Length: 88
Image (spheres, one colour):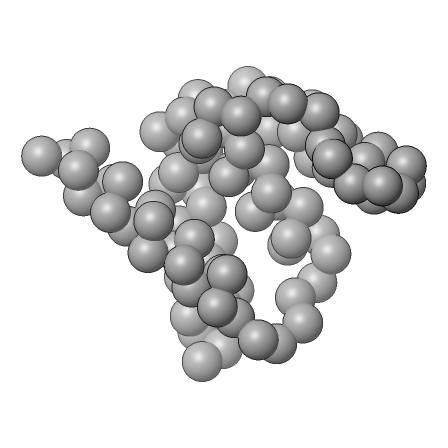
């Protein structure tokens, strides 16, 4: 039951980010990117056409490499609650 709640909260947080219309700081987006990729077990290389953006994304993933899937979901949710929900 706990995993179902975590998955549900995670999907809700992802939807909030996807629907958020205001610009977000790059460092926040990179953390969200890394947590999202880990939470979804998506270890593909960043797919931007801009090498610099790929480097930043790869760096964010490297910094978060020791986080497991469940922890990544929790960190994503907490970051959304702290940085996005409080601003609405």
